[in-house]
Amino acid sequence: FGGRAGDTLAWLEQAVPRIRRQYSIKEDGKAILGGYSLAGLFALWAETQTDALYGVAAASPSVWFPGWSEYEAAHPIQAQRVYLSLGDREEHTKNQTMAAVGDNIRTLHSALIQRGKACTLEWNAGGHFKDADLRTARAFAWVMEGKR
Image 1 (cartoon, helix red, strand yellow):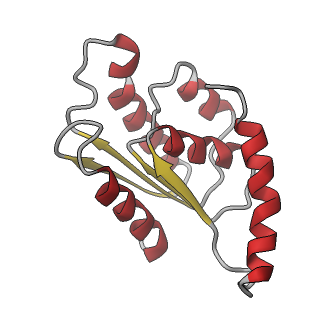
Image 2 (tube, rainbow, N blue to C red; image 1 turned 30 degrees about the horizontal axis):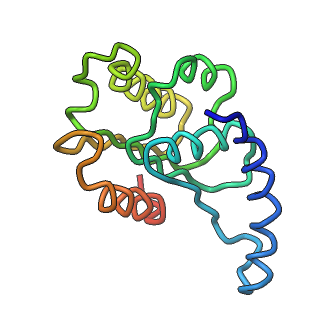
């Protein structure tokens, strides 16, 4: 929301090569970016800017953000593997902007599948704040598995 996503991505693009060197990670090692909520949205957005990542682990991403769906359609996600999840209560809110999250994530999932990406959409019981840690772990595990 602060308009600094580009700065964060620039920092990551500089940090990843340094981390690879520091820990002797092969250059062809698969980098995955992910997060929960706004961090999940950032990970999805980052992959519209670069093809440097293998996968995105977006647990309960804030795809309700106004203009996100149109932006992604014009600037497609480039990752090979994308995990999406949402709580089954998240779209049931009186806030019209946030209520769009369900339709937006279904649209994104369909678009990614149509583009031939390995993508899954997992629905979880509960609202946005239920089991965030476990849902994030499942997201990264799925992307690391390398299966459809």
